[in-house]
Image 1 (tube, rainbow, N blue to C red):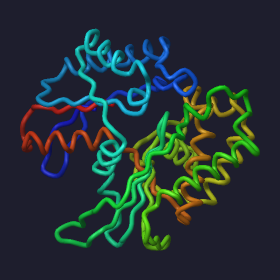
Image 2 (tube, helix red, strand yellow; image 1 turned 90 degrees about the vertical axis):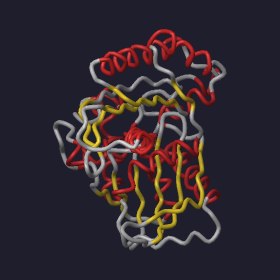
Image 3 (tube, rainbow, N blue to C red; image 1 turned 135 degrees about the vertical axis):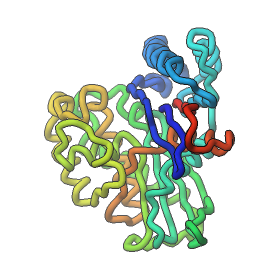
Image 4 (cartoon, helix red, strand yellow; image 1 turned 180 degrees about the horizontal axis):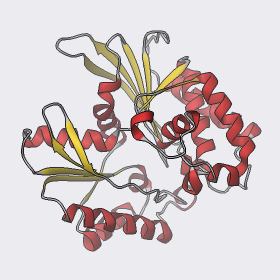
Length: 314
């Protein structure tokens, strides 16, 4: 993602995204596979080419769970540096969650006193619990707790035959996520589902929102900031299960790249909602990259009007 600063925030001028499944196989082997490395390197080479087209004055590239947990994570980071020139920074769960919060802060309603923010990733899911103080000119947030659970859509989908992530298996993962969130929730963190907010930043949430809206082509402006109710999500889960892999792959806003990942994502999402009691979730098509850019601009003291760009990649 490449952006220019403007008076309020920034404007994105170029971006690129590709599903590479870097964490594929790590749960069973403890290592990033050769195939996953090659997929990621192909995408990162494309990123490097895009960066070269712009006068980039600040750049930050990060990697998360896959490189945190893989025995060869450091070796992969070094290979990326040699072959693309990009210096990947391995960040921890807390920093990952705080960056996502920075990217999503503007979606939080000023009337909320408690906020839950979650990010469903490929290898893990992070859940943040936040207190909101109604300060002026804008609210401020204090982070009460961050939990990182080893439930990610790639990790959960591995080794399952077509249709395997359904029925009792689906219910079991949903319950394990619910229990994990309840166990990690800070003591005294009382949620009012009618007033407080839960925000989801992940491909699962955005894909469900796009499908719910019946979009034939993904449009960020219609998804970002939209809402899904628990009834919506239950209906979508039933429909997705009934479609099977090929039917999910044919859905325009899911496709083959996410066809086997969406059901694990739905189980994680429903488990989080079960634990917190919210009956609707706000969908954010923003998160870690936007948080990186926000921080880069703050560090550089960027001001509107220049042609210099900042770039963030994950």
